[in-house]
Length: 128
Image 1 (cartoon, rainbow, N blue to C red):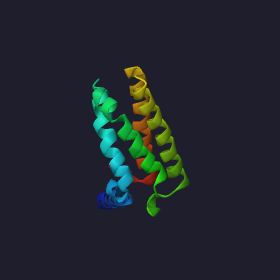
Image 2 (cartoon, rainbow, N blue to C red):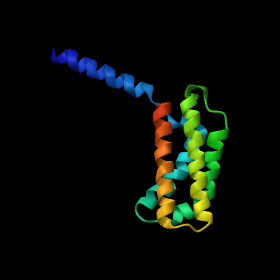
Image 3 (tube, rainbow, N blue to C red):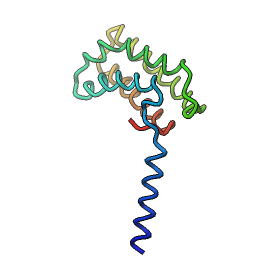
Image 4 (tube, rainbow, N blue to C red):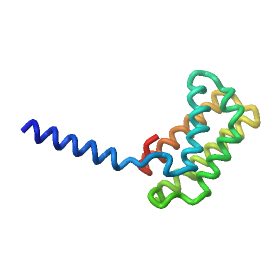
């Protein structure tokens, strides 16, 4: 009985792992990830300079992600919508930075962008 359970759990884990594609299969998403990770994580510790210096780059990478062709294995309506939502949020971040908006407002939109990025990963079944 215990062996059967162990075998079932092992097969389940293998199936889940195989269902996850690496982020490298979608270069535009990988490029976006590089920018969001170097801006979001410092903001969580109160360091806003990285996003202030890179908001235009974050917006540009989100624009490429939303407008370039999505690799076939990830090309679903809900993924397309999520990339468009991410673009809109990254535009808000960039606009706030350009207009010297409050750090709290910038951080709020950056958190939303980070959450949307993770939503795309989940919808497309991609692992970081």
